[in-house]
Length: 52
Image (cartoon, rainbow, N blue to C red):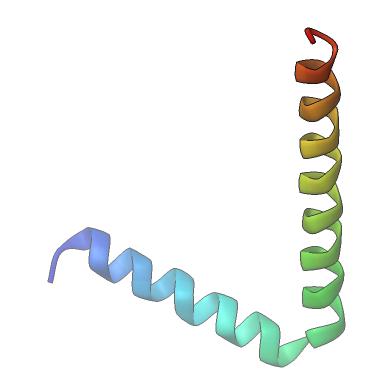
């Protein structure tokens, strides 16, 4: 196995452990990330729309 594969599996295992250990915090992180992506998309749409 390469180092990249080992690190990938370690990250996946950590994420699964974190989700199982504290699902409320995990949900809050995903929710805030989704809101941030929504704000970025909205801002980008407004920026591109200002050229029209």
